[in-house]
Length: 382
Image (cartoon, rainbow, N blue to C red):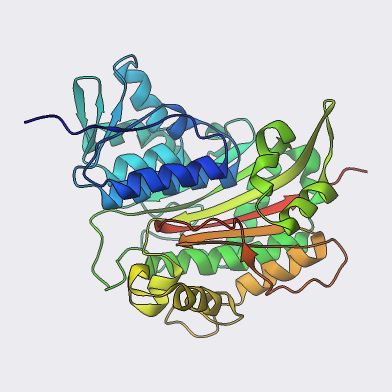
């Protein structure tokens, strides 16, 4: 029998290239996937890196034989080390049956051992040991002893997500660690809003991102967050902001000179999960069973203040708080879920509509697994 041709994904330098990779892997679930090491361990900022994670999750959820391939020119030990140090690689390991480096196969269990040190340090709160440059990530991996990481959970229980005060303490620590110099540029009111949002989001993922849209539990799932302080030079990032006039205007408003080059300094937060996505959670249907209009309406309902899929009362206001803070700060939020990628961005000091979400790109998008919520806050130095 002839070997099935592999899909090969190389470096992904833009959000558009990540979307193209999603088209590739989603269109051929029977084809093995071969990737470069940069896919799993490159640090390009929270929004990019969570998007790459989502591409890998989309492939793993759809794949007939979820074995992740690497070219034989790589050393297996080096590949395993890279996979175990950052959330995209950790998520990829957990949702695959194993990895293949050339002719050498490594089972998921053996590959996941390489993430043990990272997960233990994260659980112990040794955050300085897991920082890479100006990026820190926290990944909750199902089926491991420290699944419910102590920075995010007060006990080893999915119902023990830390409250607002606990999340405030954790986020303050993260922001200070990744860039002490600019920590003062982030107002406490934003940290407080993110604390509520983070608490609600992790509670929601524990209830609704661990099963598919029919409520059937996944064999494996990963939830987490990435925080980064970034100098987004135009030569690497400006292309991501070309798909809508509001995005172009955001870039032009916030650009500064960075070492002689145009760019934006910003704090980035990305929250990710490997669940069915917002519209599927609220509708109980796969998004492909919904029309485009129905899917958009479902996602919009999820974004309205005090609308939540959680069973607890008094929930769902965290996003509204974050949107109000972004409005005041002139920030940006992007949500990628189902077949939609939407955003809202604001002009500092202007009362822009917090519910005016637009499509990130005019292109029709393929369905992704999971959901990614990314927040960008410009850091304006006087």
